[in-house]
Image (tube, rainbow, N blue to C red):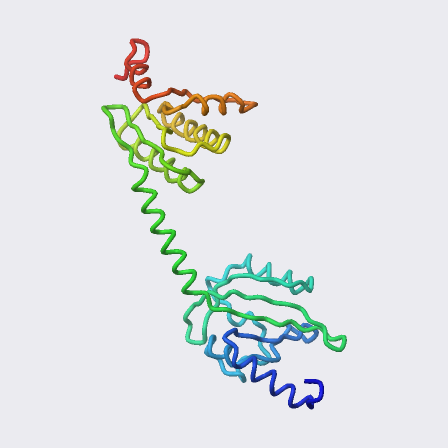
Length: 263
């Protein structure tokens, strides 16, 4: 394109930007308040503002009541440090409707003058789908962790598959509510069907034990295999320990012994 005039080159570049599905702006940080000096048609369509309404504005004019201040600070730091920065934040269109914006800013220097190019992608549908999947996963996790009352004062739950932080949080909440509502004093967690992850699983079970102990309830772990027992024995620096058994039947026999019989 070097043989073309500057005017022709600019016209071609602008046509390419306007034909892009990505919203774009250029700002001039060497002017007061880093105003927008160019916006493409996709940005105008995304925000609902005309070019005349956009030019001269700082990009913060798209922010609103639910725009995360920490994300805005991250963006400001990127500009101050002249660094390429990508954030996801909630912006607002001219009609007041919010949308989720994946914003990327990148500094460029042309003829010793600093500019920032900002590209915006509307990811509202992606965010909503993610939230829907999270809600569905939450419902599934609730169904996968049923607590069974074996008899008065005793409840049991079987863990299945891979446990992560979210599932442990759900389990802890469910057990706490169950103990409070039923006055349960003994809880069995069976780990036969769970994928054992050494310290992770052990530490989370200790945390549940601590929560239940504060509520006047005792925890028993069943389903311990020889391999799991060896893994536990290798965990160093144990300030606490779990009461573990090979099977649920062993737990019940222990609880029915004269010294520990459930009343």
